[in-house]
Length: 422
Ligand SMILES: Cc1ncc(COP(=O)(O)O)c(C=O)c1O
Image (spheres, rainbow, N blue to C red):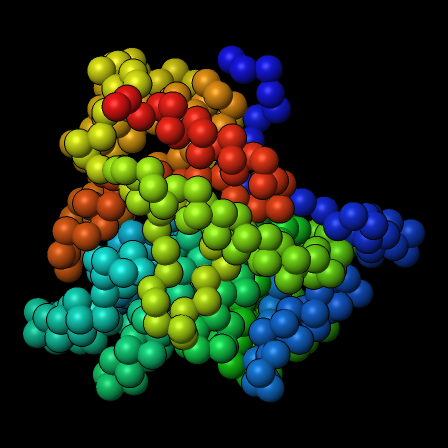
């Protein structure tokens, strides 16, 4: 190992003046140590100002996680037992798992090459085919802003409106990304945000749901607080959840809102530097946003693809050993496996680059494995064009975020160059 501090994929970064701690202290001092309170209300107002920058009147509910936001949005769209929901296959599992919590079935939609996000043509094909096969339209559509990149929301909305299907934007990774000047999360019926420790801003763990109006917000609040009816005792006419954000976490969120734009600017700066430094490195292609000026990605993570013909130091040893430790992103949990390989995995040169970079104290990760290739979803319907599987095999995530300095990016690119054998 090099004698250097590790450069992580994306780390939480508090404001310079520590204002997060001020709000957290206030919560303690006033004994608002509960999942409601002044910080929660103020954080929601901050978020509303942020998403309504263009004069829209969206409302926001702060929740315990982005996953909870997906779950409640689906529930509010009426998704239930036996229903189907069209969801982008190329994503983190939190976009699709809540569909199954409700007894519904995900219908996976593959990606378009330009954005890596939901392919609108395949979406429409899937909607029509599901109608033909089941007699019913899917209950909701969930596009995902992968690594912050905006989806083709103009086309997705047009298709959704044609068939009267609500859209739940999974903008968990796309906080502050815009399409045509409007922030993601404000186009569909609901918009999902995440404030997990690795996201654009953090509340340690947390999320939010962007709602179209006050009525929708009230309904989500009701569902998020155990769906209690207005009696002096505990009366329930519906099933609810305990999903409200803690007033402690919201204090962190309020502080983070003071640096949100600086974070977004920094992510974009890091992306621009990668683009510049990697432009002449043969076989390594940084994933850029489409030339169409309507796209404005936050570049939550910077991603690149490796030419399968590229030889990376150590690739002969890729996937030789069964992993016995916790893997990145698994929060220390070890779920033992018996084989070092699966039937769909990143190419050996990609795995070798990940290992090489780790030795140089740089954390890189594979891109999300498409959901339609996950064993748990082997029986789910999928409308596939091969794009997400192809990118999964060649893609790699590079460190980004406010903790990554220009010097770090230069070091990372130098390491990549050294890893590539001529
Ligand atoms: C695309 C996507 N959707 C949903 C989530 C869920 O958010 P959370 O981790 O806050 O539950 C995440 C991130 O973790 C994500 O990347």
